[in-house]
Amino acid sequence: MTTGHTTGSYEHLLRGYEVEADGFGTIAESSLFPELLSRFANYQGFLGDRKKSINGRKLTRSLSGGTGIIEASNQEKILREIFFCSHMAACCALFEGWQIPLQSINREGMHIYTMRSLAPYRDGDMDTIHPLIERIHKSDAIRTIQILRLLGLISIDCRSTRQLSFAAGSGSRDIDGLHMTPGITRSNLPASRGSEGEYITFQQEPCRPENIVLVDNDPYYNEHYASLNLTNKDWLLALNDDADSVMVTLATVLDSNGLGKRNLVAGLRIDHRMLPDVDHFLRRLAPLIDQTADFIITVGAGHTVDEFDGRIKVLDELSHCLRARKLMPIRIKLHGGGNPEEQRGSPSFGITPYTTYEILYCKLKQKRL
Image (cartoon, rainbow, N blue to C red; front, side, top):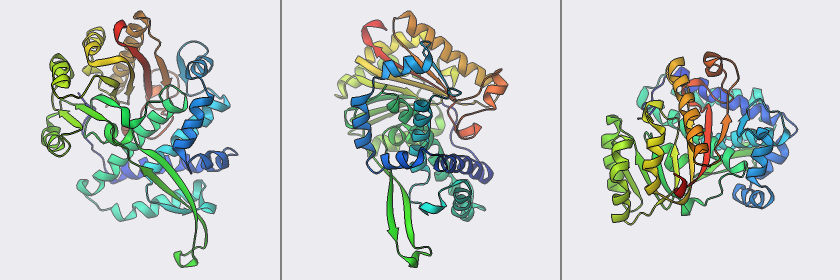
């Protein structure tokens, strides 16, 4: 079950872009920005160097105080850098192709460029603004995966990824968002462009996983999944069915198609009703994964406070069941504190319909499931 197919309005679209742009402008006004910006000239190289220099388990143990829960309110410099860098990565997808004078990279300048860039869509219908809303969803997935990579928890190469994605929706978050490499280039443009001087350009480089299985039971995606299967049959399998039914036969399907066991399992902004029995889900997952697999489950706001609370409780249940199997889940809370209503009203990034509130990560071991 998915969180629902893409919906929205121009007002939601504009607000979504404005909040992300304001975040980028805020980072640009900080003392960390010059060093952070330099990372995006060769982001893959930066990640490669970082992988050699940090121990993800030690870092998360330190940031969580040994609890396995990392709070957004944590003010340690290294976590602040991680959140800043992951947000900049998300903006590479959201603002792809935008060229902005370096001197205008601040909160006011980002606001001006956002308003100017989205103005042509003001009177657009849903078909017109749909691709831009999909960009917001995709950029949210990029932020999630980059937080995990920057924490040193995930290091798998895209081209070696055999992925299983639940609640996959259109698939753009799982196919593109989790595997894009962000980039920001700096260049001097001539006066004919209107303002001579140094510009930055937001970019992203696609990378195709080894293969991917998408699962979503929303009938809205039936024709879309049929099209995906037809045009990408050598590396993609899209199943328009509920998770439990798929898991009964998927091991046989993977074997017969030579797709191999999964080394990445993801469920981005899931509906809590997808997992009515967490223990049963984990047992069903065991025959589908390799000896080890990266496991990422995230939740969003839901449509109501009760739905949000239900999603958080599913993460609680997952954490409990994983620990009972002597695994070490990590929770990253991207919201404020208080009761469920207050938590839902205080996302760390983005706006309510389009953002991730919590991330659960665990390195699964097949024998323990």
